[in-house]
Length: 262
Image (cartoon, rainbow, N blue to C red):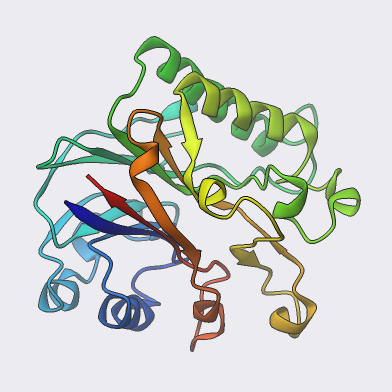
């Protein structure tokens, strides 16, 4: 059964309810994974989403910060959520479709501004979060699973606007890239986006600080769609909906899509 999945750091689901609805109406993914919802679960505006056919949701919420949610047209059940690095943050939730596919939705910590855990606690938390993800996947190898979300790391040279300029910038430092690679390997995850789009510059985030984000185009690919190797060949049709970055009151992230034939 083919289904289309999208992942989007929405930067407040209540503040940006209108553009979530726009995406659901115009693009109609079967499953939409949101990060940085910044809302308790009971305050997520589900009435509007249900009216558009998204009658199922699993989520972990937090007032004002973090928060992850999976909206779906397809029936799904809550498959848990982990508090990696014991931060007390709502950063992970999983759901299982009737096909047996498990979807993991992650919001990895951003890591602050200084890439040194000795002077920046947030950077240490980011590395610890990834390490615990890695260890969890080593301990229990995932199967028939999809992992999506804002992983807050752009791993490849062509995932950033300028590789050399960003080597000492949080999200593209070698130690972060190494931690992400270890996490990916531990679960035998395949980067479906780059499987489909193997070459060329590709971004999903553009800073609010840029006066003209589109013309400057100083982006980074922070948002990812992975699949375990047993189903990765079923993934195709990957794309970034760049236009959404220019919608009214936008998130600084654009949605990333993939279709799976499962």
